[in-house]
Image 1 (tube, rainbow, N blue to C red):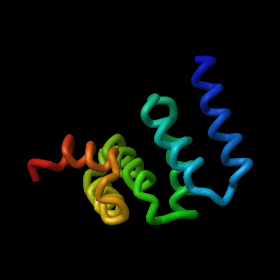
Image 2: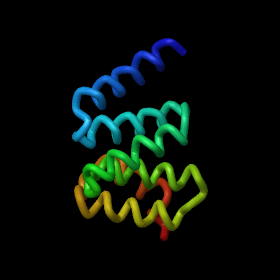
Image 3: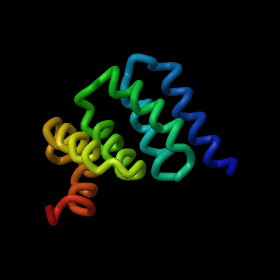
Length: 104
């Protein structure tokens, strides 16, 4: 709806203003996935963010979530491991690990 578009425009404005900062891309990708809006757009934004900052913990956790949504558990495990190596306290990574990988 309209509020969703407004939030997305805020992310796009941040990316335009700070094109060399990973956070706008990875945060935008995470928001798109969380809202269930567009896996394709999220993947494009995520790739750009991780290209800028490959060790971004949140970005790697978002990649793990995207892999899970796409039915790629091995990719999710690798992305989750990268996230937790960068920041063992990353909240999204901790949540994904608990929900999807704890019993393994």
